[in-house]
Image 1: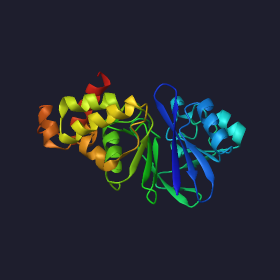
Image 2: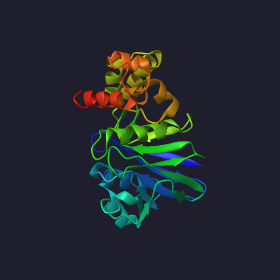
Image 3: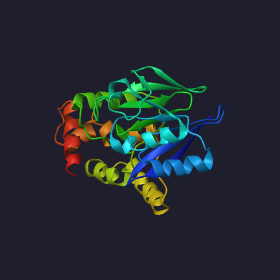
Image 4: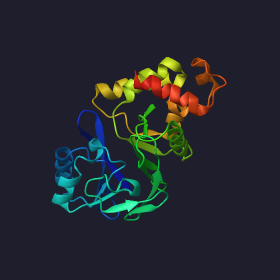
Length: 253
């Protein structure tokens, strides 16, 4: 069984310390910085076997080298990013499997935010680490890829089992909700608004969320729906055009 511990880093990043309770392997997904991860790991496990990076951006790899030096960890990342991820040891291609003891993580290449961005998906555990590709009620900016690539990447995630838990890279949920509700105001978003407010008041993360929840509320996963197209006066537009319009609006929000 996999236990996931959320560690806040920088201003709004989340890193995730993962523990395979069967084999006692310990890893961290996207260590933004050294100190918060080291503090947690030292107190809880005093070991760190693996560092998993979804992409090369510094706010997801900033702790790599110091953590690797201290704990002799192996750094895992995308083959397409092997020249850009600090200290990388093992580079995986799309659809390959990273074995975290007896837990398998499928590597899913999701270009768009960056060209080499990957997700780590465990079908057995029903967990996916999405980095900056998919957020709760939002998605990442398109920096190195294309809008077509980004919508294709999001559609890959949409097809995973609905009860899969999404662990993303940032606490953007409140602002993402405000944006979504400008263009859609369904019952699920209304309920979500109160839930988010309650969590944040208690200084608790709004992550994880399930894919099913996101399909009901995340406007970036709903670009193919007439209700969204109509609000944007794009009823006859294709999914990619609607997505581009929403992403451009969000970029200037």
